[in-house]
Length: 342
Image (cartoon, rainbow, N blue to C red; front, side):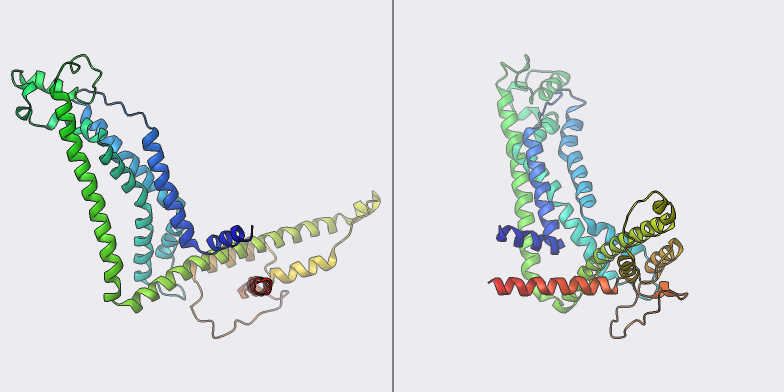
């Protein structure tokens, strides 16, 4: 049980591992969908190519879009690209790194679909059965051009009446399947060689720039995640405070009806401290707009002064300071407890 908990915590804290796992699941799903798909070539001269090429390339486009949708870094990358400069300049190298990482992960499932379809050969035979040279096969020698095209379009349909007694059907099918499998293995070998070269030639380039780009791309992703978590905590405290105010306003009516309910003043004071002066809708909207239009500079050497919650301009303070500190303290205690257990 402890191992599963450690694995879950690792995947929860490492967004790259989560994205790699999702890409693997999409690749397995593409293989499963292809194997369970009932492929029926129309066996018509004008429709075979469209059907075969459509089955080979339309599902990969859908899988590519699904890979972009499930990858939360795509939204983070677009927000980083379109945000105003504010107090923090935008680095195009980070955006390019995030974009390439997103595209690489999204391309896994489509490439798997295309390679599996080529190795299987059904789509290729259906798409190109009418494009081969009939003079290479003896069964199409004494036929007109129209009859030849009709018979070639019937090659994928071995149950058709015209192809049951035709000895050249299997030869054409084997010929096209060999080309399909050769193309599939060639694409797979090319991808393996490209991945090998990219892996082993990377240290030959500027490794420091790559490490810096990767660090700041991870920082942007983590910053957005922590900001969303802190906004959720602030929204929960804000809602709790509004509910307490509602019951405070209804105190007279509650007493008249003899309801004995706790006022929760101490709890309200603690939540007001978590709110850090952000106590109405206008201040919350102004805070969120300020975060989007002018993100703070990447310099934590100077502490941000806090203002009392009752004064104006309190929305410039940082309401998530204590939340982040509490989360950091909780993580430190968890690490110490795990070391003690070991």
